[in-house]
Length: 211
Image (cartoon, rainbow, N blue to C red; front, side, top):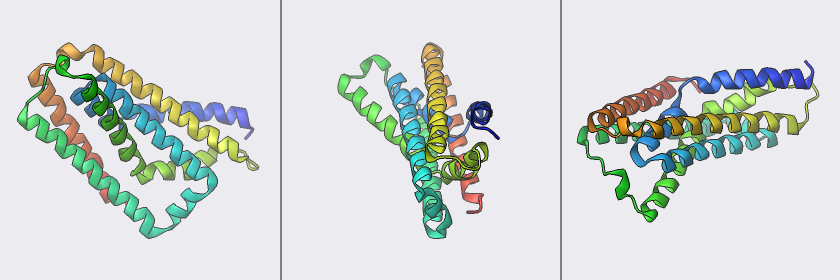
């Protein structure tokens, strides 16, 4: 398969893959609903940063070492299980309490903390998901020619990261525009409960998967 037609096929595949809701979708939604547009946007950047890091790791060969090492791979997996479970419980606790501060009460300092918090959650939830690394190691090479250069694999990985970031930022924008509806306490509680259940479901599914 020649390079540019293969790259075009990858673009279509990547868009379809990104549109399927997963842990990244749930984490970004949680941050956008809990702490506002800024936090949701930075959670999106955190996810994209992790994707870029894992793409580089795959290119330099460290990803194959991690995937081949059963203890290392299992450690990453269980960190991901625990972290997604923690975020899910946080969302459920928020739904149970139903206490939401008005958005206008946020100060510049609290907005900065929310941004850092969002980035950290996006990055950690993605970097601790071993399926992302396996995607870069096992799926991306199928779109490469036999004698592919390292920059071609890196381009595929970074393309996936950029497309994912664009989609998540669109998601955050949509949530922000619907903020009047979403800010209602019953709606917020329902969304928090749904997000929490989804995150716990992703955690359980990751735990069941064989390394």
